[in-house]
Structures are given as C-alpha cells and as structure tokens.
Length: 196
Image 1 (cartoon, helix red, strand yellow):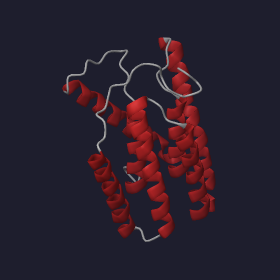
Image 2 (image 1 turned 90 degrees about the vertical axis):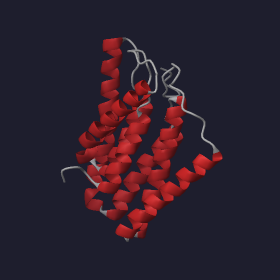
Image 3 (image 1 turned 180 degrees about the horizontal axis):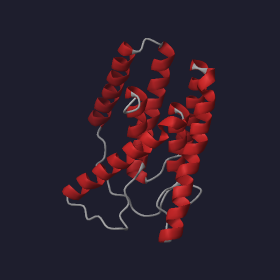
C-alpha cells in the first residue's frame, strides 16, 4: 500500500467506462432522489447538504471503483460538511457525530492493521477509514454498526455479481470497499437506520 495515495497497489476489477449519456442519467437520477427526499423533508438546509453528501459519495464511489483510491480532497471535506451540518441542525447532537467520525476512522484503521498482520498485505486503505469517518460525521456513532453491516452485505453482493459475470475471484482478488460503503451511508442518511 502506498500511504501517500491511500490505495492498494494491485489492479482493480475493471468497470466499463462511463459514457456521457450514462453520466447524465446518473446526474438526473441523483437530482430526482434529492428532490424526492426534499418533497418529504422541507428543510432547505437538509436538501442542500444532502445534495452535497450524495454528489460527494457518488464521486468517491466512482473513483474507488476505477482506481482503488479515495482521495483526501473529497473525503476530508465530506467529514467537515457532516460536522458542520450537525452543528447547524442540532448542536446537542454534535458530540455524537464527532465521536462517530473518530470511531469510524479508528475502527477501519484497526481492521486494516489487523488484516495486514494476519495476511502480510494490505486489505483496506486509509481512504476507506476516512470514508467511514465521513459516515460517522453525517450519521453519528450509533449508525456505524449498521453502515458497516450494510456495506459488507453490499460488498459481498458485488463480489457475487462479479463472479456470476465470469470474474475469477481468489484470496488475492481486489474488490473496492468504497462503493458499497458510500451506498450504505447514503441509504441510511436518506431512509434512516433499519429497525428504528
């Protein structure tokens, strides 16, 4: 792993290039989700911050899928935006999101260090830890177990889809964790915690 770029130095499973038409369709879909959410939630601040979160997560998921990299230029501002929204929305809940950001980062760093000691190679980059920190900053520490569980299930589903499409999966196969993690954060942000 190269600590300066937070990426694992093995080739990723290639995703097809995105055409301008697909990019436009994704943009329209993202706007529709935010507008639909906005029709339920009338707070303009929530709509604005949700749009920023959604676009940030979409960009991070795409970059990680293509390059196995979650750049600090996107993850760190996402953490700051989550903390800012919590402060504006409910200063009383601010401590929950600060703890969430710290716990999210620490949890995946510990998992990454343990994996490296057990397997002798990196399995999680620090970018994944920063993305979970962003999830904690937006959702609070209470949501982190649900985020990780949902992301793991989505990641396993992604591996299964790759396998069904003919990819050969081995213990050395690299599947990015950023896209399922980003989707889990988004789904819980929009729909709330399961069993709530």
